[in-house]
Image (cartoon, rainbow, N blue to C red; front, side, top):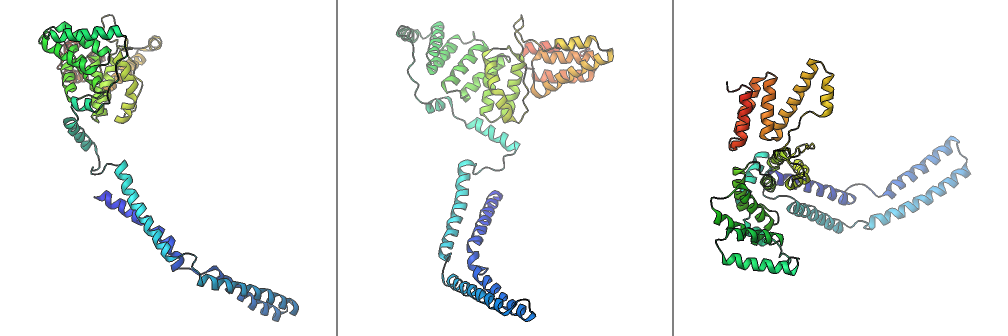
Length: 415
């Protein structure tokens, strides 16, 4: 309500100023010729005074009187025209005032209805989070999202391949319990861009396999559904992603789509944190890593975070991400340092790692590394606090929790 009162007041104030400017000629002031007439009459009186004092002679006085009298007659004629004429009609001025008022007030309301958000209160952080939760519950379903998409063009492929896929469809439909046939059909339908048919075949595969499934199966089904809806993460796809991450919290594609979904739900803060953690897991060059790197800067801007380039580790021999350690320059510099300086350098590296994990998150290996480093520095109290927080973060991931507990045992925190 305050907003509407404010913009109405501003619009009326601007309209009032325009009205004052348009009507001023009818209400205040005098024609310029009236001022000229007063000046010329004063000049006639001054001529008589100059003649009496002997400043000018009689012939000069007559010549000046004639010239001033001529100007008085011209000014008087002009004054009569200005008083009898209508250089600024009052009716036209009033019409312009009315038009200006309608244009200002109507234009303001129209522009706000187009660019603004009528009906919303001041969107503070709590209201934004509440609105995001409401949208998450009421957002379009998978079928609704697919219905909004334009018709997909026919796939461009060789005729022989199209014939083979058509035959595969017939065979897979005839063998409703053939899991391998459904898996092949899903793959080839996706190759042709028929994502809806692809995820339907993948769903059939999951129903046939029942207990013999991995996290990747649910993640692939979610990805096919997201592709079928044009990149939109529906509630049905969200459920599959949640199941994938429950089984495998480090699943890269699922983490990418989970962050994408948070961005679509107007929670870029959560999306940025998830993507930051995923980038630090690596490996560099993975498809989901490339997708995150292309969008994380914009997500950081939406979240109000100052983005700093994140170094993505490559793959280690065991397939896990490589942890970032001191650079070659750091090692070279440390050799020339005193014991105290070297200790300060290590403390600085540990502090940076701690700050990053607190703000952006990280992998279980990085949390384990921080616990061990704090224990080496003798800060057991802080190491214990980090251990408790890590157990909360990775409580659902048995492998990650085991790694963190091993680091805590080595640091002597469980003793």
